[in-house]
Amino acid sequence: AALAMTVGARPVAFLEARRWRSEAVGWSSLAAIVAAGVLLPSDHGPAYAGLLGLGSLVTVALLAAVQSPGSSVRRMLSWRPLESLGRISYGVYLYHWPVFLAVRPGDSSWSTFAQRAALTLAAATTSYVLVERRIRQRHDGLGRTAVVAVLAAAAVVALAVAVVPTGEPQYAADAADA
Image 1: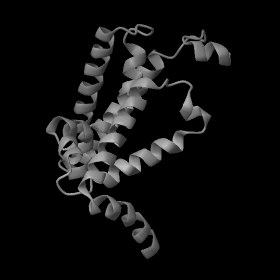
Image 2: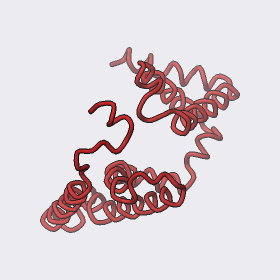
Image 3: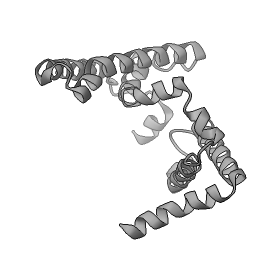
């Protein structure tokens, strides 16, 4: 354990030795992560060619860089809207796929994306308030929370069942697999 802590602390110590290193690594890592998320395809590409580990290394570099006190990247990532998104991020992860399948499948316009994103954020926020926060705080006992959790899970399953494809491929990648 001591070796792991020493090795894990080494990149942070390297970055803290010169503030410009921390800033350069932080901003370049953040830019690389955002660029990969926006520019790389989701159904093929470098991640599927064995380079997914590179994304993990870039993420580690970003995490090491934001450990420096006073880091501008740290201040930017501490912006309240981003903190709020982080608070509901599990719900966003959980609900985005059923919402994106249910709302105008096949339509890739910006207005449809905005509708899907708004519905996903609304579902994630509702889930956070009604389920996640209550479980974390044990606010109203496990009885009612369990009922709400089961109903929320049932709603997600019902939505997923309602949008299951009929067997005909919807996307080019699905057609290639068929």
